[in-house]
Length: 359
Image (cartoon, rainbow, N blue to C red):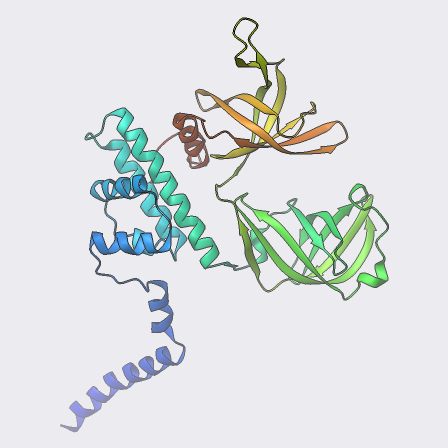
């Protein structure tokens, strides 16, 4: 009998200790936080939860109900907290729509467009609800950053080195209106902001350890920040590209016979699209184009030539190179926007236009 009690004790004691350890370090609580949404939820309950978090148009609600019939909604309930779950639901649903034989081409295109829009709104909600980013590794070497000093001065810099305890930012002399006072900056706290993946702006606070002259400018060595935080998001995502393109400026002129205003286009101007999204792009060109100018753009995406009209919202210049910040017109065809979405979410490993994800 005593042997049986001893055996049972040997089995139970480690379990009790394990339970106390897990409870001590809040393992169960952490796991529950990751999946805090009710596991058992009807489609109606899920729709109510989604509409309470993000604003959906009536069309988006109707299309979301159709999407739930195409692919399971089980993952979507977690998309507001976990990015990977949202992406899995998006990719698998897109693939299911692509392979479904219950839609004609026009309907499939319409459903896919609203899938992208709903996915975009969920991403925006999650980024602002969970603004913390884990580490400085989210910044790439060579990436542009803004350095904000306590006196309100802002410099444009570039991350050139990441160590274990320090980071180094280079400020070119062309971006410095007056010499940086080495002594006044030492041990001062500065705020650094940057755009990550062109869809959100992040910031962190660091302390200047040293300032030196380097590469025709100044190199600031800063302490490694403990965390960075999302402070602003784009309504529509952007993706870094280098796409050759051409555009023409649009002008309004009166018809000689009727007097009615008609849109005409000027000479072709060459440029490169530097980043692109479903709502706009950035163009690098040698031609100066005034703000508020309407332009017609032509550029390739995969095997398609895309035509989009836009308006110049901002212009910056460096030497004889101009950067045009373009906002697409509201009358851009849904087909063109869909092709841009395809390009952004294409399989980056192959560079091919394809539907990815496992159903």
